[in-house]
Length: 134
Image 1 (cartoon, rainbow, N blue to C red):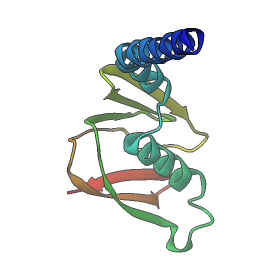
Image 2: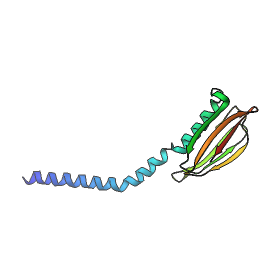
Image 3: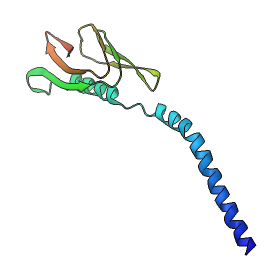
Image 4: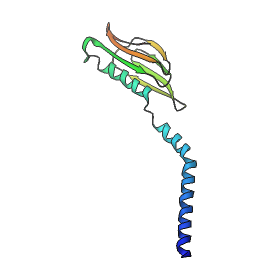
């Protein structure tokens, strides 16, 4: 009978130790896995801009509009053939650069978190115009 009791106590202590270890390491594991997950609302806005520019010819009246809500501050720098995006995600500064074969009007935007914007992409005078309206 004492042999079974010892096994139960050792098993219970092992389970307790495992739960304690996992509860201590869990925040660090979440931090590590959170940095690997880079798809948030800002990333999906970048994908929407990319989709709008690439499929502007397929869209009727050569205009793409979409309402968006940002989760993070976003800096957009538009050059002739590329767009650079900078934003922070989980405390890490992320930079994404997309290149295009279309001519883009040069602009700079700083969009603030938790603000609603209307994204408008228009084809005008042999170039693509990107704008945001609050």
